[in-house]
Image (cartoon, rainbow, N blue to C red):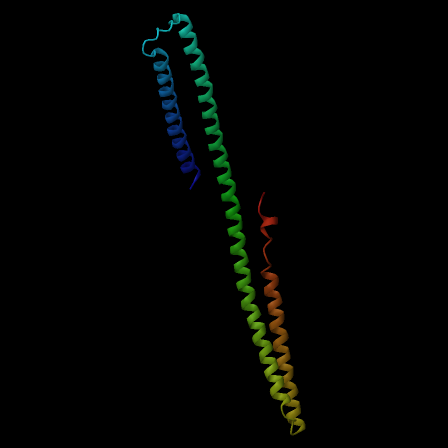
Length: 183
């Protein structure tokens, strides 16, 4: 959910909660007022308060309600601001980790292909050496030919390993998120 969606959801929930709380408070006051005016059967009517005292009580109650409403609204705004800030921070960390994971996958893939080529070259070298060493040479010319094939196999392997090392230097591992992601 993006920041605006979160903001809209929080404002709507806050507004509905405030409205329900306000209505519950009004109902409680009305019930209390009715209870004060109703007397038990056969009892005497209580004295009515002077108009000025009733007005002062209502103003005092309204001021208290205003303070409570202000606190609730301030808490709602603080919650929305904190939620938007937290959402942005979470999105920033997720984006950084995604970039790291993609870079790491690319490096691993490139290095794996290179390592496979190096392993193939080593297998070819070992096969060549094994084949040449399986039987003794029949003549000096065959021995010279075997030395040349061995030299080519070793040279090929060393060349492949140099290519792999260059590939590894060209594809270094990315810095880990603890170093590359802003805090």
